[in-house]
Length: 208
Image: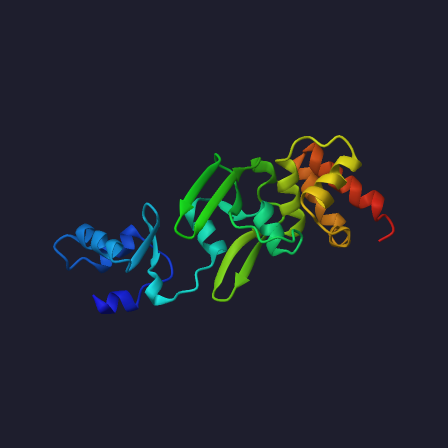
């Protein structure tokens, strides 16, 4: 068994684990034993990571793609990672093309919000983090996703209140967003609030 534990990948599923434990009379009983002793940790049904004694650094972004999919990291969590939201955001927020879903795991809450299929692929990047890679929204897409799920904003003044007072974003960081990328995202999203941020970028920073 020691060899199996030493060779555990950072993420593994039930099928992989039962194959490794095929020499046991009851692999399922052995899995329950490993869970009780915290040799392995269940993230959700059928998905596991090594226990804390193995001191693995687990990428929440990579894990988020595995928990529920297809999905990509977005909304406030992605905005925080991109430096647009100053506070550290604890729940891992993701966009998906399926129904809304939330998972309360030993590594925290992973929240998934449905967005229109037409808007799903645009503005999603493959991010590399140490030995991991996962899908995450670009700054423009993460902001568009967040605004699309916000209440209807009637004018640019309400947009500024949301961005700079409620979310405490810095105007100079908004200025750095790519207007061309936001234009493509807005045209695929076809949501009022997303067109509003595009208008804001084009009007406030027309000469840049």
